[in-house]
Length: 402
Ligand code: MLT
Image (cartoon, rainbow, N blue to C red; front, side):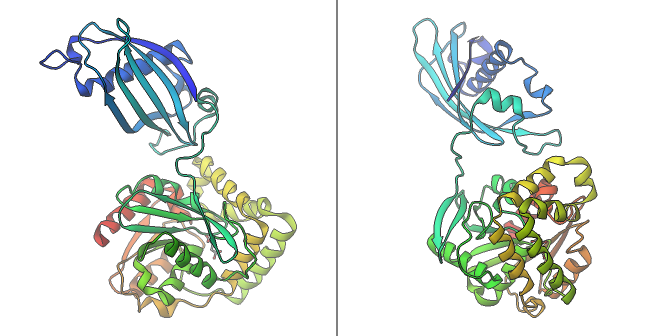
């Protein structure tokens, strides 16, 4: 826990209601005044501005403990009680100076936004100020499935949406959608060998990944979910639709394609697997990532590239080699398309090179009643490259499934 400079704020008449009490809503404003004061006393009021970010409140829980009146001076003590990669929580205690009575306590959760209004990692100076990362409120659950310990993040309540990541990524590629879409229970596993999931000993296959997902849903007591799969996650979704259609309430096929690998692609999978085994995940990332992201992402969003590199780095070599083998051996899913009977959204980045819009559009046309959306300015990783647009399209679709 990191304490911030304590601030003293005076209750003004306009903060109070007709009965003379500190008005409830005004407590939030008063606490905000205290935070500004604390910045002035500590790191400077331009802390966020000079770091190119803005703090916005995502959630506020206030407990009103005693009335306060105009001209009372409140001493507001503040402590950072949670620090994540892009969010932090400040606990506030407001004591009346004259008698020490606690007037209010509040836990306020902030998220750090970049200049484009997207959640972003805390800059170094804020990390130093707020202290070490506390254990994440969204720490994944660990569930043992067929010899591998799988990490799965479960957030919120409501109908379930299962997010399945692509290669060479992990569940954090959905971080913006996991943070938003708050009316849904969001479930995001790391597939075996990726992120925080162990590689296991079993042979990798697309069907094996699908079996893992069904086992996770069983362990979480979830019968049906809308399944949202990106690229390799889409290949796995086709297998779920083929073998476990009763578990899929709706389908989101994101930056993916139904066709099997060509002979040429299979050859390059083998070559990449040998390269991964010899040179490791970092080298694979350097080789693959420039071809996956849109040119504008590469030029203007270095943080997206950095996050993709981090995800690739977290993959084990066994996980990478296994995923390449699984994709190489996957069957053609074109025959599945016409059999899909659940609401389906096909979504693709306008500049996706591995699974371009022409392929996505043809896929949408082959699925009865499917919706189709193109995300401008995105390549193959639309949920990370253009998170707001992707989440909007997803949220609109999910409303139709609810
Ligand atoms: C992915 O993002 O999962 C990969 O691009 C899939 C593939 O290599 O076919």
